[in-house]
Image (cartoon, rainbow, N blue to C red; front, side):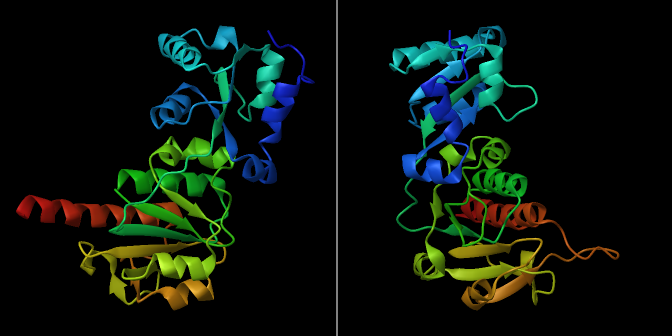
Length: 263
């Protein structure tokens, strides 16, 4: 059992809390049985796995440990103090692993792409990724100024979406424009000229969601073919980014289901 915080493997795992180290190593930390199950199901085999015996006694945790050992993953029992040093949660879940950043390829021709512009809240970004995966988005492009999608708070909030949804980081607006070539690009804005549910989402399309604090950047606005709004009752001015995206993306999913059932 590892009991020292000075252990080199523990120090290495903790270093992955820093974005620069995650980028350099191409790895991230995942915590908890559910997230690690998602990672291994997607073929992201851990480089290291740490577990606290008293917190990993459930049948699912034991099955996961057996699966990891069968895949020759180095698994280390750790003292509770070590687990707390690896976890960023108030109550650690008992298992923490170092896994490769998933490298999922988008479809050759994407039908629905989500572009995130200057989203800086990790919880919101994680919720958006989870929503995008659930609504059938083909790919998410993260524009400049958006929080690192492999931040631990983002990973926890996304609930496994990282391992099911292709993400593109660091393209810049020129690269994003190239990736969106041939798609109709809509930008969500409270003052948009068209209601979101009057858009034909059965066509190949992209949706840009801007950050709540700063709104959409000039480059995002220039890329859009049109701006859409979500009509609201009373004096409500706007929804937060994650909620607005969910409303629009599930309308797109609804339209596509209707079309599929009609074909």
